[in-house]
Image (cartoon, rainbow, N blue to C red; front, side):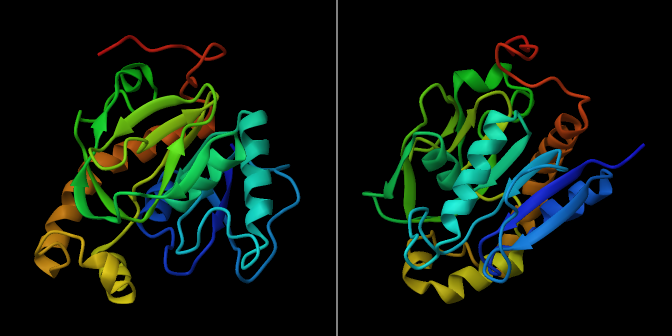
Length: 251
């Protein structure tokens, strides 16, 4: 059986696939990584069974400095139209929202940074990826922009007190996560060193090595199974949500 092939769009070297790549490759998924600062994005999604879009330091609408952002939004819109399983993280979630009719802006409440909780919304209970998550899973936050308005018809899946649109699904199987699940302690520490003003918004000790190592062990326990469910969605072994998929019972 041929391994499913995912297009991975990487806007910045500072946010690599890291754990997400390890988990997907262990699940038999082939990854085609495109580093967008170094090479053009594909013109279409032919030959791919899914899409991942990672994060970066730029804004979702910073096309003057990064003209390839328009190509990313076009591909994410195509992915939704083609019902390709899609996982868009942080900047990727903002690009997904902007590509499908949502609104992105600088967050009025300042940066959201550190190891923090998000809370599932009611719609998560019948979602194939979110239903089995704890109600308040830990995540890595490191952003100052927000998805201000969800795209029309999007399913709201998770919120935080500071910024409510933390996770959402557009269509049957395109997921936006405002937070990070792919990091290592070293990646988070590098972000803190590169953006000290944002890092100063985190609680004391959130960038200590021991704290981050323990936090990432907890993150892996929750989010590795989530990514395994995403891989099943890519392989066609898990029905997507929505009217054309198979709804799950509420938990």
